[in-house]
Amino acid sequence: MFSRLSNFHLALAFLAIIALRFIVGFHFFTEGVSKINDKDGWTAEYFLKGAKGPFAKHFHQMADDADGRKQLCIEKGRDDRGNDEHSINPELTLLIWKDFIDRATTYYGFGSPDLVKELSADLEELKSVDNPDPGKIANLESQIAALPDQPRDAKRALESHTIALEDWLNANRIEILAHYGTESRLAGFDRDGENRQNIATWVTSLREQVDTIRTDRAKQLNGWKYEVEEIWDSLESQINTIAVDSQKRKEGAIPLHRPHQRSNSKLAWINRIIPWFDTIVGILLMIGLFTRFASLAAGLFLLSVIMTQPFWIPGTDPTWPQAIEMLACLVLFAFCAGRFGGLDFFFAPSRRADHPTPSATA
Image (cartoon, one colour):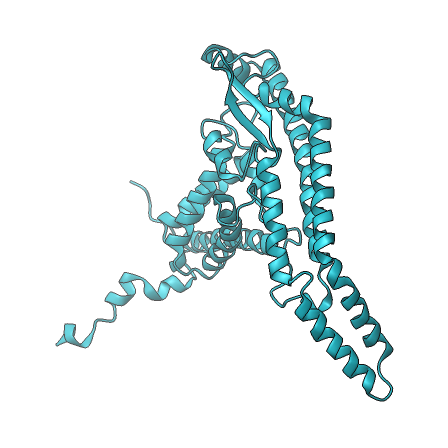
């Protein structure tokens, strides 16, 4: 028979549970706050795209345009023999850009004759007063002069960026088509069965070779996507710059909607939820409130992280720290750790039973 723990050992266990709960909670809290305060905007995109293992395809699909097809204007079809055939067609991108110009024209009122009349009246009124402000006069005159040219400026911006995109696609056409044409092969490892896949996974030298090729392909793809994204950013910035002071609205600049960055995509929801999830779970664990719910949610989240890089599969990034913290969360869940120096103590069933209601005692 096991001997009963002394009061000293019970106190140590009590303090250890409190410390474990607080440390895990503090870690989640700091992670959440750092994501919320990230100036560049925290995103799980690269995390999802880098997933490996049996669930990798599922995680890749959560990322917006993970393979870059939409951004690089890639269309997939079939040749006469029924094989996959890729082509480059910027038609969809150019339609989106033209729609953006039309929306911006309506949003700001580019070339609006009514605004010209309104600003001209303001200018005459300003000049009629004693000692008018030269700066305000110059500002109104520049706005009035710029308004008639706005439709032309927007059209020229669209044309110049269309040429820039087409030139870039033509300059990189061969390499881009070669990249997508060989996506099902990795340096001579034809996808002709599971045997070669198993060899490439479990034999160290071959696995490292495949990983190197995958890394190089990813770097090349990210470089292309970055360069194309710069063209999108330039068009968005230039069109919004055309608007004069009197046309700018409190809602801010009009955004250029991008099919590879959807506001309601799975990735967008993940980017919104995870920072606040980490922060709220961290606070609940630190104060010991709803601890079973918080620790279970934290454990399941860490399990999903582990599934993106299963540590038992060779070649994956180490996720041992997440596995250890997940087990810690399960311990907190099993021990109802919020009742140890936490707010859950006041909601414990045994405590409520010690204070029966008047009807129960009658």
